[in-house]
Length: 494
Ligand SMILES: *[C@@H]1O[C@H](CO)[C@@H](O)[C@H](O)[C@H]1NC(C)=O
Ligand SMILES: *[C@@H]1O[C@H](CO)[C@@H](O)[C@H](O)[C@H]1NC(C)=O
Ligand SMILES: *[C@@H]1O[C@H](CO)[C@@H](O)[C@H](O)[C@H]1NC(C)=O
Ligand SMILES: *[C@@H]1O[C@H](CO)[C@@H](O)[C@H](O)[C@H]1NC(C)=O
Image (cartoon, rainbow, N blue to C red; front, side):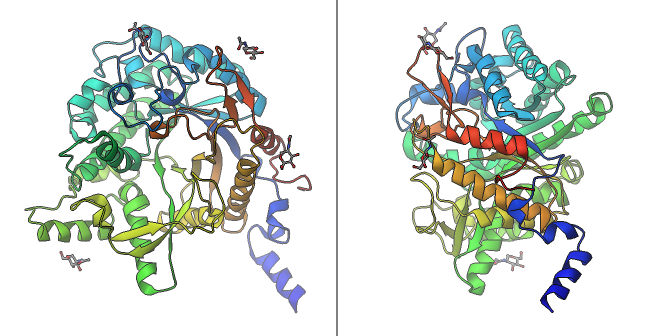
């Protein structure tokens, strides 16, 4: 009986032969791409060299207590001068692609299109050409939080004009580099700079009067409008000749109900809509999720606002945003448990109050002081995207493990990649998710924003004290190199 069932199961499913084997024994598909990632401010250094203008982060690290250890990205891994070491590390790993970001004020020192910095253009030309010479595809993030300081003073992502400024900048990058760059990621993790960093800045830099409950939505609204503008620009002006593809990078934890209760299940679903759906729903269906429209609208009325704090798209904007992606790009590190409620620490109004959800992690989950992990949540996230957002092609543009500096035998990171990549295999072979690429975050130990250098995620250790910022492969780099070379997670892989 059992074998008969097995045969039926093997015959009826598309990947029939695959399902008759242990998933972790199977190789990733031949066409599957592995890469590694970085971002400009986190590794480049040279913050005030060769014509570069200041960014918001240059200002923050020098003038506020936002960074835990008081460190800066002034030098970081010094990749501006040592990018050839980075290319050598990527070559050693055997990656198919390198995801890096362009530092906006290194190209446009004031943020505006009227003044172009030739040294900045030369740097990225050298990096791109150096990668291509080693057979490594450049995947370029246009904005990874390096907003030029003048544009910050004009209101940052809250200013509607950012759509034009960002489109001018992206247009220049397509002109300059689009002959060689075929994968463009417009904006990295809007949730982080529209929500998380607003909170970090308010709490640690003591900035008063930040309009929470409004700024988050205005920021994300302009992100979506700017992304759509750039996507359509590429589609109409460049795609036919350059033949590249464009997407936006969305970060998401996966929200799991804290219990089987209907309330917790509803809270998890609501949180997914407020987190992932905030961006994916407009991209796939042309507008925000109904639960966001309802909740924020109702709270706004109660709080005495004449209209919802969640902005509305015009009909033309909806048309531009809907379908503005060639694949879905996701950053995912961990999951969280959800239950209904609001934390008394959250300001009212605020995004975190509007979602009506309390999230926490199970203390029993394994991990480090910085990252508790739940690998099954990764597979659930992929399946959720498949089911709710029309089975898109998905690329993981960041995933990695956070631990302390100077751990070269980083067994916990190897364990993380092994567990998470196993879930990726299950999603591909058992769930039919169209996952086509995976990016390890990060290539190097880096300046980790408000955590400075106290946390590391690199496959390569960087000796930040040394004159030449020596890069040393950790054990996880060797593990990842073997995964890339064999497309297998274990030695017995068939
Ligand atoms: C650049 O910044 C460094 C500190 O990181 C400072 O010592 C140096 O004088 C600055 N250079 C210029 C040209 O302003
Ligand atoms: C919010 O208001 C709408 C009507 O505008 C109503 O249909 C909906 O049930 C309300 N939602 C909540 C969560 O109160
Ligand atoms: C790394 O640590 C593990 C566990 O302690 C040990 O089994 C392994 O041999 C170590 N590897 C190296 C290269 O030191
Ligand atoms: C510079 O880096 C190389 C490895 O790339 C190392 O062998 C050398 O000792 C380093 N020199 C200094 C002065 O740190």
